[in-house]
Amino acid sequence: MSGLKVRTPRKVMAEINVVPYIDVMLVLLVIFMATAPMMTQGVSVDLPQTSSAPIAIKEEPVMITVRADGSYFINVGEDSNSATALETVKERVLTIREQKPNTLFLVQGDQKVPYGRVVTLMSELQSAGVENVGLVTEPPGRS
Image: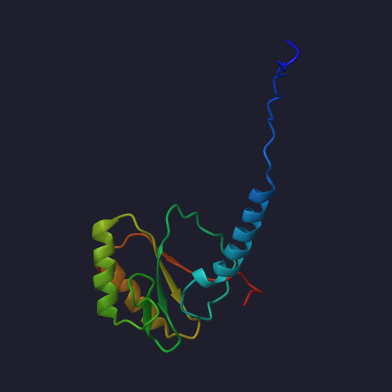
């Protein structure tokens, strides 16, 4: 029996090497940090400043922007960065209301836009049956 070897049971290794996972996580973090600023789209406006409390939003609202030159923009659709006629804004609002009746609509108007343009937009939203409308402002001292 001198030729037989007795096998000793191997100890089970219960460790996980996490170094590759950390490397992958750091690479993904860098990618997301680099691409996050590119994800925000919108129309540049100079918002009026006021001290008001922020509202709680459950789902993403529809932003309707009025620029200083009086042009309208809506952040829905393939041409969200191009000026839209008021009638087109109303048509899109009606389409959105059919699909999601409780959608919150936010009006983002430049502080230099004539007051009548914003009132006209609010009137069109009301005639489209919109009940939830908010006005976007900036806190004082922020530009």
